[in-house]
Structure formats: C-alpha cells, structure tokens
Image (tube, rainbow, N blue to C red; front, top):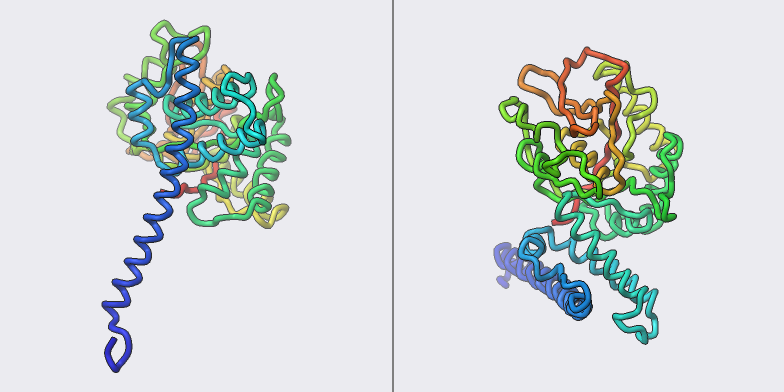
Length: 346
C-alpha cells in the first residue's frame, strides 16, 4: 500500500483471489456431497444389480451424461435425494433393502435417466419450488416467493382444465427441468418411444424422422439449461387467430398473472420450436399422451427464412409433424401453448 492509498491493481487481484477461494470452497462442498451420495447410491445399485442384473452407473452413456450435464443439476437432484432419505429414515435405521428406501433411490434414478434421454423432466410442485430456489440464475427467490409462482401456474392449469393429479395421485408436471442441447433436425428425430406399445415400428417419435425438414431453412439452435413453465395444452380460445392475435392473448395471460400475483415476473411466449418440440416429446414419454393431436398444431416463435412461423402437432400414430404458415394465416386447428423460462445457474 502506498501513501496515496491501496493500489487499484492490488485491490483487483485481492478481490479476484477472494472470489476464486469462495468458488473453490463452494465447489469442494458440492463435490463432497455428490461423492458421498454417489457412494451411497453405488452401495444400493450393487445390491440391486445382484437381483436384477442392472446398474445405471455402469452404463457408459449414463456416465458420459453425468460428466457433461450442468453440475448444478446433479447437486439439485442429490439434494432432493438426501432430503427424501432423511424424511424416510430420520434415525438411519432402515437398510438399503427397505422398500421405501429402494423406491426413493429408484425415483432418483428415473428422473436422471429421463433427463438424459428426453432432455426435459417434469417436477412435482414441491420439487419445482426447490428448483426455483436452488437453481435460479438471477432472482434467488425465497421459498415463499417460489411457492407463490408455482401456485399461480397450477391455478392457470386448472383454469385450462388440465388435471392436477395423475392416476397415482402424483402432481401432473407443469414445471420442467430442461437441459441444454435439444434441437429439431438432429436430436428430436432420435428421441426414442419409451411407451410399452410403440407408435412406430422403428421406435422413434417424429413423422418420417423429420427427414423432410432437414433442408428447411430456419434457425435450429440447441436449447439451453432452463426451468420451463409449460402446461401441455393449447391455450383455450387460441385457435383461429393469426400470429399477432395469439401473441396478444399470451401477453394478456401474462399481465393477468402479474396483476393477481405480484411475485410473478416470468415473461410468457408461445416458445421457440425446439423448446415446444422438446416438451411435446417428453410429455408423451412421461404420460403416453400425444399433444397436440387430431390435426391441431401449436404455432411457435421460430421463423422460416421466408418469414413463416413453424408449428408442431397432429401427433398421431405416425408421429409428430412439423408445418409452417405465414403470420397472418389463421385456422381452427392452429393454436399456441404458453411457455415461460427461468434461466439456470451455470
């Protein structure tokens, strides 16, 4: 330090060193938690392998996924696992052979594997609250604020007649954790049909495996890591409107959410084609329901080179279709979905 005060360069170096130290300590803590839980899982997986002859962590494709996915995702799922284990086994007396403990680990496995193979996995309402608190890039909301957001979105789903619970009594997913990398021309045609009865003989989900649109001229950028607010329904009364009228309808929905719920700060849109296609295919593999079907389509923000907007739908036994129309075109079978996004920590 000189007589004129701290050297700016030295201050910057000290601040940078402090930042690096904090980041290193945080990473060390995350790694320790992951290693411990990973070890616990391997003990379980080894025992399960003796019975079923399978072990998820022994699959090269799964290990590659773990190495490449956003590490904050793994930390989030490991945190969910730890909390569920504590609730089910507070005194640590249950063994890995306990059926409840087995199911907790199995659900942990299912969600990670579904995220790997489908690029987006649905969350229960409570999991969504935790994700908004744990993974949010900018807002870092309190649990109370996150709860209000999830509640507002669930109420909207109810207004659109989307059922709240599935046959098992579980929340129907309306908020989803989605990973980077999904696109239309390469990834979508290779998403496998995970239903017991395959729609198509080749076990894939897109009509003609999207070969017909490989030379279509539109931006096919990969998706990003994000939390998606997506109700798997066309917005009521969104058909037979042109692009601008549909945009106005979505803006009105967004404004109503903001008015009724001051904590709501998520912008809604009809979504890019890659996001909507990802959600349609993931929804089918999770529920077996094809949406949009029966000649219905969801228009998207994505534009073809000539200005047409791309749409997806008519999801029938031949697979999911793509189409495109001018912004002024309207039809009784062309509606829109509403999609909101919270960015993820990297």
